[in-house]
Image 1: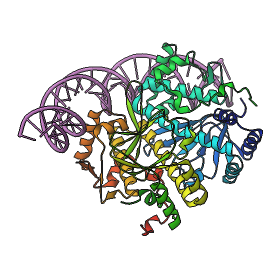
Image 2 (image 1 turned 90 degrees about the horizontal axis):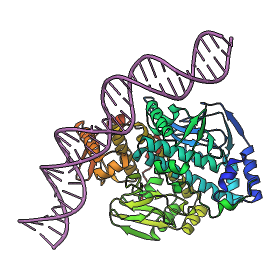
Image 3 (image 1 turned 30 degrees about the vertical axis):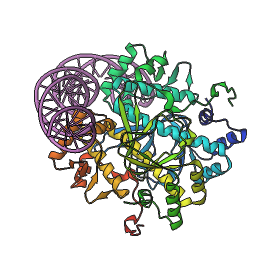
Image 4 (image 1 turned 90 degrees about the vertical axis):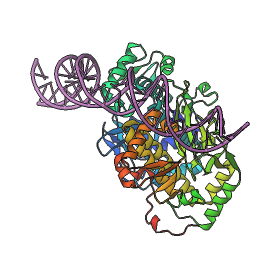
Length: 247
Length: 247
DNA sequence: GCCAGACATTAACATAGGTAAAGGTTGCTG
DNA sequence: CAGCAACCTTTACCTATGTTAATGTCTGGC
């Protein structure tokens, strides 16, 4: 459950003790807490920090002039928001807390320091940002090509596997704080249809979703429904499953 | 028309003569040509280079097991495909030529050299990759929230403005090589509906599209239909319109 | 122990967009 | 210059999903 970022990065590369200490130190420098639904940064503001979500779920979202809202990405424990953002003059979207959230702010200086002294971390962070881009692309495919049932199944598979990589699952279950409204804003469908779709997945015994807890009794089966191919998550370091060196 | 990459980067920052010479030199190192419809790199391959599209249009796409295809991004002249890709073990999608295309391959060594000796270029390239990510996010919004007419209008606005930044427009017109099938694969709609939607835009005098040429007589009007907010393209360098120093 | 607010569920009905199929251009190629 | 291939257009019909609105079920606060 601890240090989800480190746990995740180790899916890509082995980190030295010094690397890990560095990451822990950086993450401790400036910590902020947000209530559920609170904005962490809002469209139009100048980005000054890289945010690292260390506890809770956050999301990127964008609102159209007429009020329609689209959730563009989820940030799970261990996820970083945009390396290098400070290059941009202003945010073109907002980041909000989905649940109560703990965020570490990484300053430009701290980031540069890490880039210079810790090539392993640097590599690992680029990997994480390439994966984030790949996820965004997969969401494009999801919204463009899959129908409601496939789309929902795909999202659930992705979130479950990402939570697993961050050490936030136990057995076949994980906490699942999203409301049906939020699922609709993510998948581009009405709440009514979200509900119908979840009912259908439940009826097929593909998921159990109750009391903010999601259980996927047979992940393979859900993946099949979703046409889910995990390659885009790039979690395939040779032998990463052999490492038992959790900290 | 020349050096679309330089032209585009100068929307973000001023480049020195040495910077520009560097970019020209790098782009000349290894050049490849592809016929329309040919793959530049295919899902599953190991990425070894950063590709720079210097002439023609290319696209990223992904195909589901059952054959459905989604176009995920367009690469216009001056666009780069994924800084740092070589970190990944294999491509999770393909990149294909839409028209006949000229591509410069940038090796890891050349990229590193540039990063070290040319901080202005480094900054500018990160900017360009952040913009590419922002575009991908906007496509998520487009597919998730906008209806067919808005979606089509939005895509046309974006492509036109990006072509303008690369110096590939004249007055209110640009070359527009996409078939209706490709538009459908981009916007997640059937060709029949693409056709209906284009008819509707034509009937409202919002576009003229004929003989692979697109004219947008009143860009503002098209943007209004699309709920198009150009902020995500981050083309707003203070005073960039004052620079008359084209090379 | 009751009420308000947030969330989930269901039903009845409406519509944007998909599907299938046929015909119309245009432009190349032999 | 005939004929094919790629692309565009249109029509008729169908269905996945949206809309509206009513009802149900929790939860925390008083």
